[in-house]
Length: 150
Image: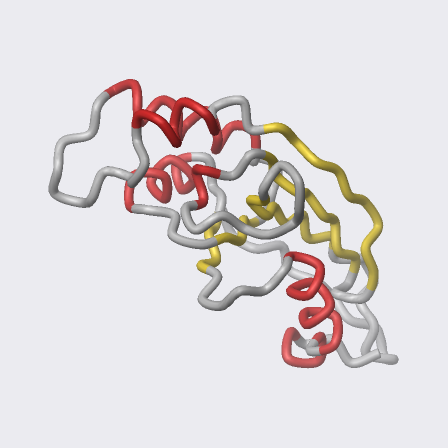
């Protein structure tokens, strides 16, 4: 799917607002990200308008977190055979996040990444301990790098 083309008027402002829906895997009792994305107890969903303001947010439960943590403490590596059950769990997680433009978290793993890609979701790997709201704050502060000039 190609990105939507935006037209600019003479003032350098977009004629249409850009809404980016971003999903973050977080723990049940905090907004910290688990070391493995599929171990997220819930997902924080944020809509960011023109990289300027949050216009919507909600939490979505990950009903598969307990079974994944117990049966699949590490995602099956590329080259190994994955069970149908494990891949279906990753597809179910992708289904929860299917309306997101992209998701952000730590250590996704090859097969969870494949499940996300099947539904058109892009994954951004978090390389440092940063809370989701700090990540959003950084995106807003650095919005000029994304082409915003207002």
